[in-house]
Length: 614
Image 1 (cartoon, rainbow, N blue to C red):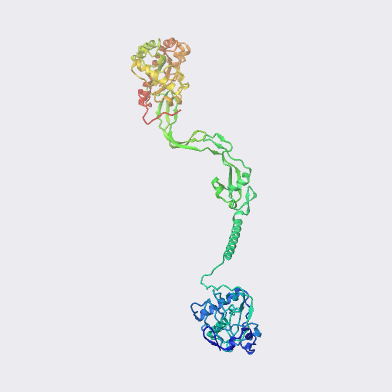
Image 2 (image 1 turned 180 degrees about the horizontal axis):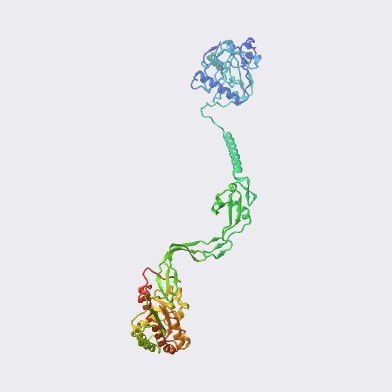
């Protein structure tokens, strides 16, 4: 017996070359008992790694601890016995299964022979290692040998944990010491060896040591990239499908009884623009006063859905597919933008009744209103009344003195003149009174004579202008100037006037109502200015006299001699008929319907009252 490098004796048969041992045929009966774990040659590193991983898993299950400092890997099978197969049956030497509990790995990095197997079977344990400084390193790199062995247990079938385990080992034409180390390792394992055959093959690159399995699964960059591309394709396809279903496909929309194709995501505004508003015309833009500012400045079109109108704001919020039986018509006219403000609402003026005497029966008061001012046109129009105003009211009355007596008033215009004193003398002789309406331009000392005679002095305006033809300022000046002249001449400021030609409309009242107490017209016109003769003048008065009547005559403005001649006959005839001749103010007082301030000539407009703006 020889002694290996570990000092262990081995039989002489173990020293023989592996090639001779492999030529011995295996026992045929073992083939019937043992299972047929046919092992195919491992040609690729992937199969070797799978076998190594299976061997490691079996070692962990059986709790085998590997000695420190040894990194050689040996393929093992379960410890159950099986009948070995001959080399002629397999063509290869199989490594018999060892008990993982008795396995002692070869120290790394140096190669050692495993001990000789028990029972005379040859087995070589191989380890691929390239220790630096080893004498046989160059020769080992030149040639490598894969040796496989097979063993089986005769009594119990072998149980495989995964695929048949193989271990790649390097075999070189090294000295016998290397093979002795492999035999020593085999003897240490204590497993029976079957006869095998060793084959010398061209050197192949050893597989990298298997990595220990971890709980976390690792992925290669290529697999991750493929997964990402697949995910992008799936998501992109789903997005395209959703986009087509809800955004891109066309649907038919009924407009004015005709179907129009439009994208399902389109709103009414996009439908209108895409079809040029279906040929309808836009509306116009109007000023706040109703004037046309822009022929195409109105609404672009009018749209209804199922009979319900849509506003311009709803065009963009209403989906075309949701609209039902759209109707598109010409656009409506619109009014220009305008600013709104609250201003005073001035009172109007009204007249009521008929009669010779006109006076203010109700003063006007302003209210409140909102007005609109166009931003483009600058026009201003009323919008609404916030607080209604109180209109000014001018009443027209004829005097109707109360009682059983009859009263009449004689009046003379255009004085004073040279005829005024003659008339005053006749009136004093008969003990009667009259009213004189003097012109401001004619006022002189005779105006005072009127008052001294117990008669009434009033104004016929300043220059006898036709007042409706005057503007507001001229009108007020005509009235005020005459009052000033009379006041300067007599010390008294009257408020009663007689408008030239009797022309004093509501407009003149609105412009000057605060200056006068009343405007006195007449009931009997003698037409003395035509010089009809004294008899005609007398006849006109007497034939038309009635209780409360006012007769018109002149003491100025021309030849008034006929008036002077007719006056005595008029007075006598009236008195004979039971009339009492009085002033206009006295006649109003006898009536009882006229306000006291109007009768006395002391009218003052209230502070909260305003004149109408006309």
